[in-house]
Length: 219
Image (cartoon, rainbow, N blue to C red; front, side, top):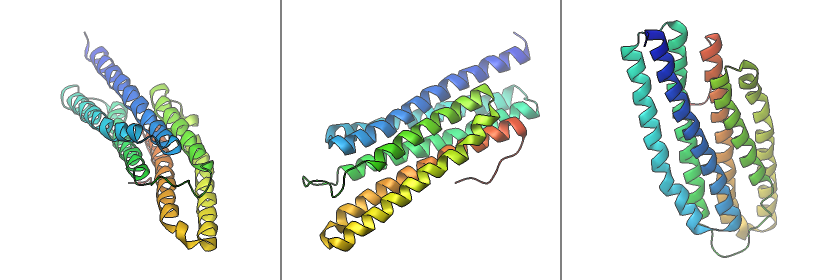
């Protein structure tokens, strides 16, 4: 097998593992919100436990990328591909941590009813899942247009966060006894807002891999 063919074969293995990692992270987001909405403590604990699998995937992909950099002598565009992959799996791992944090928070709620219907939080979660999925696919498909679209799509996530914040502030003003629960819900919404930022980060690393530059993203 020639050097070029070997490089492309090893990069394809990295792509496949990144797809697996992205799928696991998407599932973590979905499960964390389902655990919150359904008040499913076992599901919340499952998300926390499965975070280790995602951590292991990150380390596995990192080893593969470093092996390619050390042994295959990649050209400039190849170097950007691998460097972008290393940065993206860091964002994926942080998103998984935030999904686990959401699950940890959901375990803190008592048996009382929620102070408001959870309508905007699940929407935020679905939007960030979609952004994350499309970001990784844009890397694999070298789709710069999709990668650049994530920043605009994140505006809707930010708007939902502001809506949730305003609603919770109004609820606390009417009844200060709701403050503890409102704070927990605010923290969950903030984690989802940060997940959206990390998804935008993924898109910016795709732009770097394809075009050779990126905007300053979340760290």
